Amino acid sequence: MYKEIDSNKRKTVIFITGFLVFIIAIGWIFSRVLGHFYILVIAVVFSILMSISSYWYSDRVILGISRAHELKQDENKELYHIVENLCITAGLPVPKIYIIEDKAPNAFATGRDPQHAVLCVTRGLLDKLEKTEMEGVIAHELSHIGNYDIRLMMVIVILVGIVVLMSDWFLRLSFFGDNRDSGELGIIFLVAGIVLTLLSPLFATLIQLAVSRKREFLADASGALLTRYPEGLAEALEKISADKNPLKVANKATAHLYITNPLKEHKGTHRGWFAGLFDTHPPIEERIKRLREMSF
Image 1 (cartoon, rainbow, N blue to C red):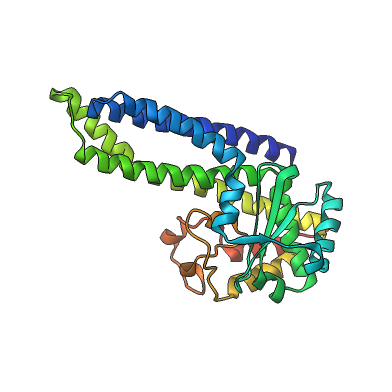
Image 2: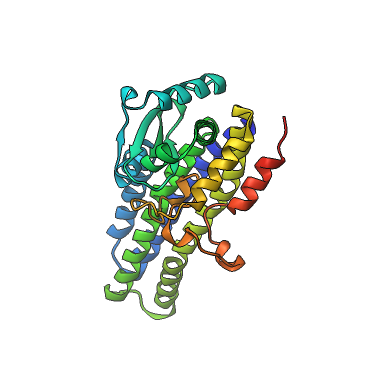
């Protein structure tokens, strides 16, 4: 667990640093291609501001996108008791609890550290799961909090979205800008800028997928250790994955946050191995199989 925490902290620094370098590099290329130095200055300032914002304010953005609102203790005392008991067992502060008013069962956790964490569940999750199943889901999400997965996933949501938006903007700019570089050098810069712009969404997606798959298996295992009842989480995953309702507020930028993929195209459809390569979550069948192989 401690190795995973250290790894997630390092990855957060690496991704933010990589984002800074990437955006500044694209800004430098386009400043040369278009002959405007101020583009590089804008890229530097923009990348610094976005990196700071992604660390301090991403959780608010994510909750806003998800249309979640805070759930008071007197609105669902049983849920609060489950969270409090599991937090005591895990040695974690009790996070704020938010709810999404949607009948699709799902959940995620976010925040920059355990002291500023948020646990978010849907109305469908509260209505459709038994207590032991709910404990399994909550333990899974608390594991993300304890392992600092939440910080890494939160930062990725914002940075991936920014990279994709910037890529589209630079691509448009390259076609309409005034290229003042002449000869082969100008052509090289233009081609390099367009190639980087076209590949950046793919790089962002691959980063997102590389982080998502591994941490779900780890959170499943940690959650099962926390409740000492892996069957509870296994049954919860079966119910959630079998539910045909798509989560309306979810999108491709936030899908990897949830305990199972909430998007419509993943509900009740058989997916080939190639399509599965681009899924943000491991196969549910594999996760359930691993949980049921655990014994205490």
